[in-house]
Length: 164
Image (spheres, rainbow, N blue to C red):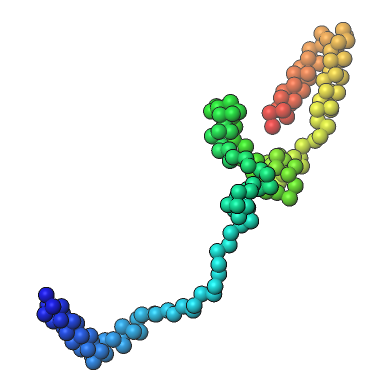
């Protein structure tokens, strides 16, 4: 066993010697990149204060020993599957917490749709319908087919506007 290992070592030395003499070692050195690293600076482990307090027997976070509640536990508390809706904005970190539930604008063709909505449209529509009701209430216009046709055309236009 010792003779075999000695023979293997001698054979390996001879092969390495032949490669060095033939110049193959230099060609290998050109293809390899050997890095050297500097000795790392002494960087002791950082242990947060909350962990140190917890290890020493104190409270973890200034008296808050709350157990973490998973989303599944929250779902079961608030009605179960099908009733509970996940609040995706609950943990959002924004400058102002009131921004969490702001309505996201609807953008169409690069423009905000709300910029083209008339804020007084409901008031104008109610006024128009009241005016039409007054005209229809008068007996002399109630039987007039022309007024009824105009009313139907107006309703078609209004339905078209509402469907947008």
